[in-house]
Length: 546
Image (cartoon, one colour):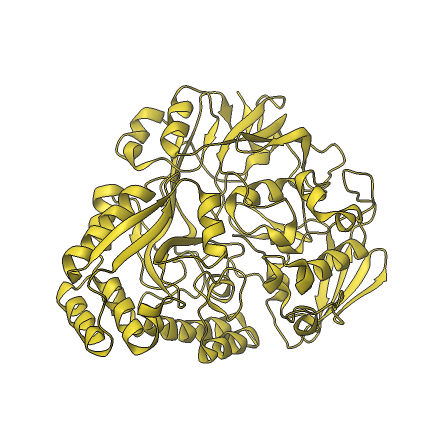
């Protein structure tokens, strides 16, 4: 998950409502090479195996995303607070929020020697949008004029009419409707440029990509299910220049093993402490820890294609399940209070967030009401006596097994049905199962923001046909609210409409919101200048050795 912003970028709210803002090991300005430290050290960090080949428009999960955001760079990037910073963009201009002129910096090149030009962006975006290429992030181009034609099922078209190359450093974008926050997205992975080599053999390119970011893949750098090794790109000259000798992502099947390595100084940066260590990690690590709210949430998807969750009975069942979950009890007992109960589908650190949306009482634990709703659903369409409500999750993530087992027990005890964890060994395997729409029950889900916008938590996840719409949810009224919010004349007005869209979600519950996320991470005795960004991700390029 990830995205971007514009000159009218939504900034993080000055009032971070969460209490999880204290952090150990300092804070303040984003560290840089001038902060001192050993610039030759190769930093090791935890990760998961990327789900797919490393193509910008086909990477929408954190394992691949961590790598993509270091080996590629786009028109803009974001600093530690979420503020947009120009990378390849000289300017992004519009007079009507529908037609944009984008100028890029000259003299840039990919690591295979090809120049980065306006055409590099236009070709990459067209490739990402075209139905025949089946890219997971194609949805991000839906506002560009002509997307509907190239993305149509069985379409053989290659180009969107809204993209035009003017010269080597200039291209124009015409949208199908005005969208004042369009530039906000342009730092997201899907909008990265690609060299011509990528289109000749996308599969081979995805295994050994030539990017334009602060790092590049080392020779034989991607050892599947073991590690991804990155080295500094000497030709990169942007604001995220590497202050270290490289970053190696070590792939772990569980966070307990990663934490053990961290304590032994065999891992330099861990972005999530496992529940087994949450009670003691601050003592274990001294001043080398962080506990910081970020733009992310945890949810449980209940696919609309499941027969038991269709129609009125399905809607009642979703609401009953939501109200059968005692979120605070799970947070206290498993996460030691290190999260906050969800009151909507977004995040409190975003501008426009509201904790008092009409209908959000469905997110409050209420055993009696949950039983009542379940009984109403049974009168319409009885729940099969032998049916087990399963919650699919990868068990290589921090606390997944523990919290889902607890949640299943709560649902079972409150509703009088059998509920249990359906364990999947790895995140990649789970995402494949979800993507192929082969779930037989609910699934663990969540979102890590790509750019700081309410829309980023709504459109990509619940819009009809959206690339990250795991449960195949579709509601025309919700889609219309999204469109109206994007076309609003101001960010504030857009946020108001997006919150109205959430009122629809609170009735339909395509996912059950659980809690807002905070990053509890740490680093070894061998590194310094460690900081975590607004979206949970460590600022890898700034980390140095001691």
